[in-house]
Image (cartoon, rainbow, N blue to C red; front, side, top):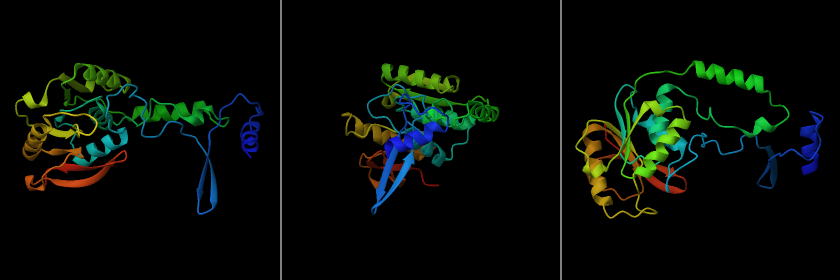
Amino acid sequence: WQKAIFDKIWKWKNEGDKNHETHILILIVDDVARILLDVTGEALHKRGYRTEQGEAPIKETLAAGLVAMSGWRYKESLWDPCCGSGTLAIEAALMARNIAPGLGREFRFMDLPFYESTQYENIKEDLQEKEFIWKYTIIASDRDPEIIAIAKRNALRAWVRENIHFECSDFLEETESHWTIVSNPPYGNRLKDENLGELYTKLIHEVQKSGWGFITSFPIDVRHGLANKKLLNGSEECRFWYKKN
């Protein structure tokens, strides 16, 4: 059956040889099999810009969702004090500039015989014409200079390097700010840090004062007065803690 599917696809273009790669997925539910043609390739949450990352990165789609949930108004200041490889700041900049997700990546359908490159390029041009150019205040900081360098390169690949101010600094040593915070701080599971309690105490204080919130599986005392939403970061159950309106 695999050969039959392959021949059906490629003979459409009179190229029924064995030099083409075709991904076919079989989904069986309640004894019913569904045959699916993979037209995506890499998972859709992978935008294509994050070719380098730290040890515990957040998915790009989840990062975009957190920025959207925060209600951030693009002309306001936004700060991720634990930026890691820069995903949250980059997704915020992409959203603010109306840059289409995945615009810089490739898809599996581009290898298939019915792919029309001219039509695809026209669609990309239409999307690019809808992009915005504005001066945004998006700050991304981390205490690790190597991860800041990675974040800068990721932002460059996402075409938003000029929209993000990167700083190598320790959040615990920062003076108080009046910036809206959206962050994915260390949870203490894979990355051990003896100062996590102090880190979260300061994060909670900043969020209570200036808004918006952070995602974590680290235990937070509900008596701090922050609201929360249950979310999954990969397979890990987390809470997004944020300031009540």
